Image (cartoon, rainbow, N blue to C red):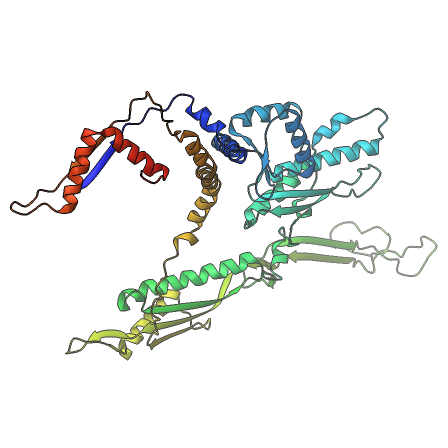
Length: 554
């Protein structure tokens, strides 16, 4: 069996073959070809501009509606492209125009912001009353405080109300100023006591003669943040609950650190409940004790009163003409002159004398003020569960057994010492040995690749370019390629009398014939055709031409 390959030398296509092919196409085919070329051009332009998309960066974020509208109008005037983030929370511009745009907007006073400070004082006009000036100053002070509080990381927005009484020298008692602050915190943010105290002192220090106790801070949920310790003692708040939880977790961690080395990690569970007293107790006692012993006391005050009258002779005897005074008692001394006649002596020479002494001594006095601290533990309750220990029997099989009571008592003693057990306080510790029912871990089913968020985001980002490429391939294969094939199809050569007949080269690959065997009839015919082609190629060409044209052989 042999294979025959024939090569025909055709004439090259001329330069006007495309134009000739285009002119030979029908009108509908020309329209399809034009639409295909136009579609490819549009897709190429779209891919070009899509590849040239700028890198967007945030220009401003968290703007109010007024400032946002003013900035958008100004960006449109400056022919700066912009877009919004998802949700409209920020305005984005190309990265290479961020700084230039910010400076140009700042030169025009944008963004102005919803809070106005002391710049309100610059708009004072002629003819303003004193009340208007005071009101403008108060608004400016509120705005400055709002800006200061909004600069805190946890505060999203703030609103301040100041109550500034009119100071008048004719009032005996002057009213003190007060302030109220409303805070809007970022989602998931909280303020601790130190931060709240900082805001309170910030507001109180900004207003003259304002007491920090006159500042009230409320969050967006209506919770009073600036409560006094007395007010906090009346009810529970989040910080108290956090304190109790931290205390219970501390005791639980201590128990686990002590028991886990004995029974192994994961074989012990502990829970501690703490009863904490947050009440504030203040007591005052005054004791009076008299002076004890013979020791002199401290004199507080002393008063001495002395009153008396001297002795005076009173008249006595029989009244006479010589004198109204009675004669004195006569004396007759042995030696010496006699006493003269005179007035009688005093009948009663006694006088009156009164003395009064008052001494006040200091009495022992003890004044004692006791203020008990809040957050003291009133009672602790600890519950500990220990898993059965695992041992290996003679056959090598792992089995579980209960912990001996002696070892369980040792664990109980360790737990009591760990938490600071106090029997007088009413503390309770209970250690139980039981078998843990450990559930088998559930095997996680691997997530499908198309459910992965990263892959989904990648698919979304590649959807547009891949779709454009697919559309381009569809247009190319469906409209452009068939038109180009029709344009490049060569025309059949017309027969000419003087034209040189095309050369026919026949290459015959024959299989080697077996020696000694007669030549088959097909091979004989093929050999005759080969010989005829070599001898008369014009006749063979006419025969092939008639076959191609579908004519019957002559």
